[in-house]
Image (cartoon, rainbow, N blue to C red; front, side):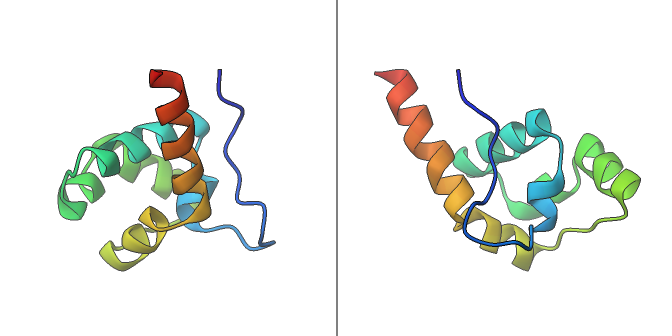
Amino acid sequence: MMVGFTCRNTSRRANAEQLPEALRRRLFRWLQSGIPYRVILDQPELRRALAERGLSLSINTLSKFRHSEEYRYFLREEKKRRR
């Protein structure tokens, strides 16, 4: 079982990192599946969660998140889990 994801090397958290863990995991899977950023950003559950928190995501910030330490950690854990 995976422990909650957090970015450990910075005190400022990206908007995507402030989403509930279950939604972040879905976001990771959408990114991993190669779903276009515009389609991801149009997901009702993502839009609702962002609005509830007063946050926003753009294609640019989603791209940065895809290259984040947290996302790389997720990929490593998924690879271990599949073994």
